[in-house]
Length: 198
Image 1 (cartoon, one colour):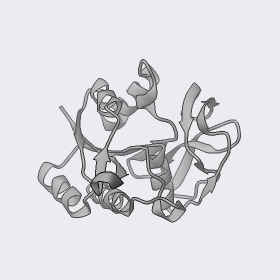
Image 2: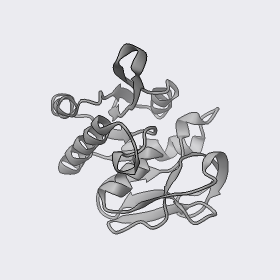
Image 3: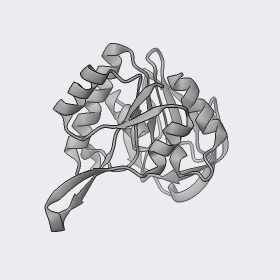
Image 4: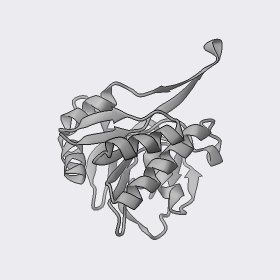
């Protein structure tokens, strides 16, 4: 069974003076439904790199949660951990798939600018293009209106914002919605992720 590393959000718990890594249990359940062994990665950059070297995952899944630091987020350790993972995956040609923040991180990494967009928090909308859906969930305040090369737009929302991207030559893709938040999981999402890491 292929091991897929997945990233986690950072939650600051002031009453315990702790910074906790966490993920909705539906996320590893989704990856399991796709036929993979989900492996969480702590937001400790050096350890994340060591885990890649020692365990060599067959894929990296960039999850949602936490805004990027340059857009007001407060989890710099997550930004750095995901940078380490993405750079490692590029070097080793390991497939990467992102959701929500994952799309934002990939876009920013490759030089595209994010923008504040309205009407995308706790709502649903269709997606058209190479990746098309009748209805997807939406939970993001920041969006991508224009993707720069080497990223190609693979899906758009009705307002023109980008909902799916893929790299022109590397095995990197991302979507703007959360497949793990669908009940039941969308078969098209399962098929898409299964094929990507297949």
